[in-house]
Amino acid sequence: MIDEIQKQLIEEVADLHTMPEGAYNIRANSKMAARNTTANIDIISKEDKSGIDIHIKPGTKNESVHIPVVLSESGIKETVYNDFYIGDDADVTIVAGCGIHNCGNQDSEHDGIHRFFVGKNAKIRYVEKHYGEGDGKGKRILNPVTEVYQEEGSYVDMEMVQIKGVDSTVRVTKAVLKDKATFIVHERLMTHGEQKATSEYSVELNGEESSTDIISRSVAKNDSEQIFDAAIIGNTICNGHAECDAIIMDNAHVVAIPKLDANSVDAALIHEAAIGKIAGDQLIKLMSLGLTREEAEEQIISGFLK
Image (cartoon, rainbow, N blue to C red):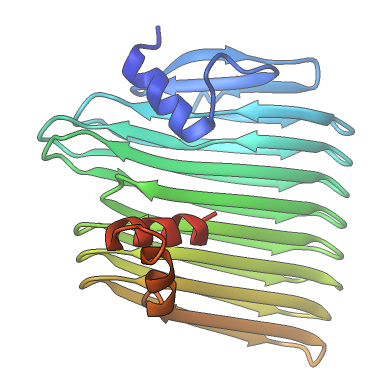
């Protein structure tokens, strides 16, 4: 059974108010709470370790897979291994994410290792949201590892979101692309208090005319710390772009580390980074409309992270 706290967490990380249509696997406090498969999407529990295998048949169109994880007991620490096998010419949406409610004194931690094997000309949209809440002294810790292996002509669009309540996270993402494959990432991140967040990306453009675009937008408040580390390796004729755009506030600390490795004269690689405070003229304009300074800042941040 899924209790009310867990339902709320699922709404936050997967935008689900009821059980979704299509395939899903809901994990609550280290146990499977609900599962459904379809004719085209099968979900199988691993036998040698904690996690699941998701098999999507070739040619599957307009279907979705939801695999949210929620922790509502203090002190849980788990590592889960999920493998996705996406058949040729499939076009699907995968919604993951983890929510932690911790009102205790022990740390709660979920480490998810996801591997994607994307078939020829397949297209996937992947959404991963992280969320934390609870007034306990125990920390909420999330360390996701994502590996993506793309065949020719495949397209992967990933949305990584962490806006509230996660005390510590190290996100590691690796992608390896073949000919004409495309890998897109849009990251949105906000830290506050003494939270720490590290995002590490490594993309190998091995196939001709492969491309990647990694865009991070973040806000760092109070005494929080963020590190954005993006490496793009171009081994043939390819296009790579990484961008970090961060708003820094209070006593926060933000680091952007570009790594471009061109092993071919035909590799076109670009890295952009901008870190700065909220522009004064933006605040003045909104405050002239009757908003307080705090309200004006929240309005700007909300628009920035959309």
